[in-house]
Amino acid sequence: MAASPEPQIHLAIDETDARGLVARITIDHPSHLNVLNTPLILALTSAVNSLHAQDRLRVVILTGAGDRAFIGGADIREMVGLDVASARAFVSRLHLACAALRTLPVPVIARVSGYCLGAALEVAASCDLRVAADDAMFGMPEVTVGIPSVIEAALLPRLIGFGKAAELVLTGATLSAAEALHCGLVACVVPRTELDRVVERWTHAILQAGPYAVRLQKALLQDWASSRSSKPLNVVLRRSVRRIARRSHAR
Image (cartoon, rainbow, N blue to C red; front, side, top):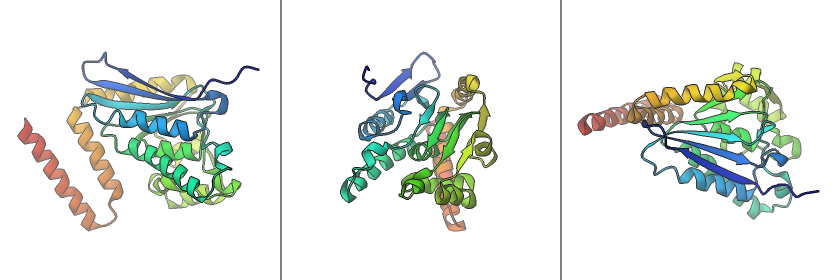
């Protein structure tokens, strides 16, 4: 039997549109449901970080190779051999990959087909927009194999509510695509053949909008998400005014 191809992260940048660059990142290890091991996590982080300095970048699309999985989760074969120190390093690397996605100054679209479990859901939650095929399956099954959900699982309560997030992480329950749409985890569910149409529609809308306005809006969304009281909201307002004023003076 031939060995399965080495897992890879593919980064393609479309420079053909005069309105700006569109990047597409593909997690490619379909024979193993695109599960994330250390080399893939490092390669994903490197690919995302390479985009931060692209001034003409407008949008990033993140997807998995094949139709069976967006990402099947973290690589259990690697995780079973971890001790405390190596587990901390693994978790830290995954967090840095998610943080790189969250801090990109442009919108990141997660194109989800098939399984989106554990680390995959944390990666998807780190994106700004999520579209799912109608056969997609979402979940945080870590407790069922004896470990807690950590890192970007902390993003779930603000996305789907504390109660639904608690159900996922405490019971290992899974959500169908329809359930994910109902609780707000994804913005759109379509047949698998229509995924790219939705991605193209969102991409076109982002390209049509003002580049600075979109970057500012993403920064504001992150500010809103981190605000928990009237005092932080006042800080957000002051930041917003300063950003708008800087843009006005730059014209």
